[in-house]
Image 1: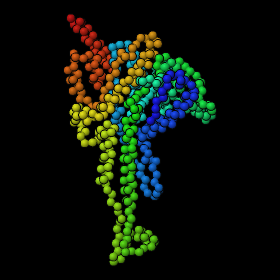
Image 2: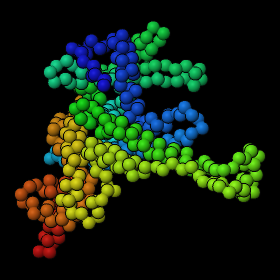
Image 3: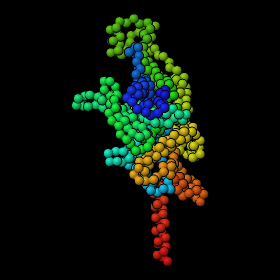
Image 4: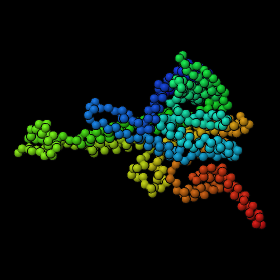
Length: 435
């Protein structure tokens, strides 16, 4: 497992030799791990590379993409319903909402949730484009090194993004690196002697403009520990398929008959056998222990779902007539997983909003990013009538803004409150005219 880079001060990292070394270490330790996890998510399991010493035997390579199922289920449950934002500061809320919509925030959030489920973490860069618009985009974590301070509670003080570009005219490939600190971006290029500083530019985010979406404390994927179980299941099913295929073309045993090769050919063509008095013809068949294999497969599959904390939605017990409480009980393990994800995801989204408000404040605003509240909603089948009844029962106990945020069909709480206010004012005007 890759150990995070820690330094006493970012100035220690601000030199080409350091950049060269951390990139080399990262490409050796962490990048292959992330590539393997992405490969398994795509269904490219190790069994696809399996070879047989005897090339005449069947070599089926059957992949069971459990990782894809687990990640898609977790991601759909946790981030299928978009995060909602509320604030008493209407100007701040309107500004933030516009920026989030321009960046297709809900889609990027879902991509972060998916990548964190696969590889243990995801990251994004917040930046200003050529039109001075605030943008944020997901980064490829296999090409990103995070740098922390060496305090008791380490905080990110830098990030190194490295990539290659190709000149399609000359065919030359150039290696680049970018160091993001709290004040500036330092650009490096590589020549025959290693990296050298090519440029540096100041930014105004007042923090490292890289947001890290952690999946958990350990920075591991939801099914990373289960890959041996995936491989065992692939091997079991593939080997059984090999056995069936190998013995489907059985040996014909002829007892009491001596035949030359041309006689065998003639029997195949004429479909006639001439056997002696005690002659006998039968196929040599190997009985397969199907029940033992099925028991083994069931055990593997059960262990995969148990340790992934993701229920098998096709299993007995999952029916369309389950109550909301029954569904939540069956998804209790998944909910515990989602609770952990939510804590880290909320922290990351708060930093994103902080970076955005820092830029807005340099343009004359005085926003406070903590004035925005985040609300997460699990993506579950909803009994709408039941939900509305529960919201009605809370009327007068909690604020109208909180009540509206609980309704699944209200995407924009602030806009809904404004529409309700406008309708109320219009009703009052009609009442006044009527008098």
